[in-house]
Image (cartoon, rainbow, N blue to C red; front, side):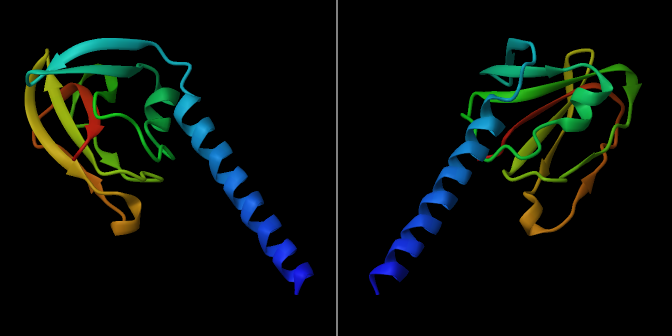
Length: 133
């Protein structure tokens, strides 16, 4: 009986440590430029995704972040850029902008609610992802 309890405790500790390591690497893995900005009267600190690889990674595998954080996707030209929820673990709001003016806001659900791809009706040259709470 004591041997089984020890094994269960060991498994629990390994899972706990693995989860903690995953969380810390997900939150602190962004060596990206940060920018302060105001959107719809809210002050935000955003990570800047201004290259293809940074935009492709986005906020995948992030399990938590403060409400005042987000990601700013900057594109070379205006177009109807679509987003998907691959490995998206939080509900997000996508704020599409053209020349600094908001053109549209779309909700993006976490992946466990099903696969989702969202495309705006209007062209945008930047998009902000923020927590949708």
